[in-house]
Length: 208
Image (cartoon, rainbow, N blue to C red; front, side, top):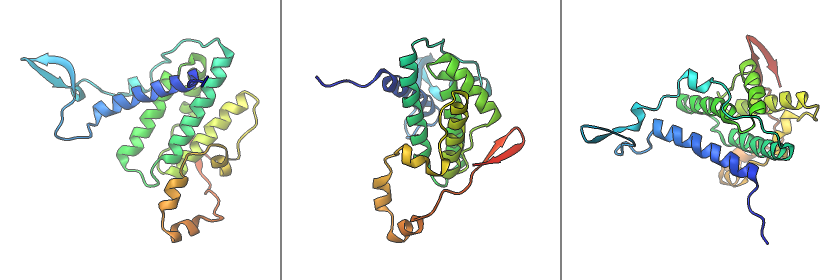
């Protein structure tokens, strides 16, 4: 009998859909369509954007979920979460707009706050306060994600990743994108190592 999706993958997918829904309400994709909340004023529904506001209090609020006692579920959730996070960074635009940069930052803060393992979420929020999300480019985002992953691994006494080769461990599914690039673009990447990424920590800077 075929085995269905793991609980960790299902949970992470639900979180992503929720966060995507929030941003979709804030930034409607079709200018001619108004998204509504169901609230009515004079018989008309009011636009959802009037009532949805990802304020600093929302982004940086306390952990939402309680403690996750099942160690097997916790480990499975962690693997799925890191896969999602690293893939998101690897798919992020090379030259993002200001809106895209802010969207990714907000996504990361909300991801930490809504993570289903409460104690894990609290620890990750501590890391984010020391090393805030960096989203100026794809390379910066990828390097930052690898750096904070290693911070978590240090706490758990796990092996550290080589951030120059993080893509070898987490396949982002970008091969199809590479095939569409011009030969000159692909040739320029052959043998090229990832550039050093500087991670800011409370006014100081680290290179990875």
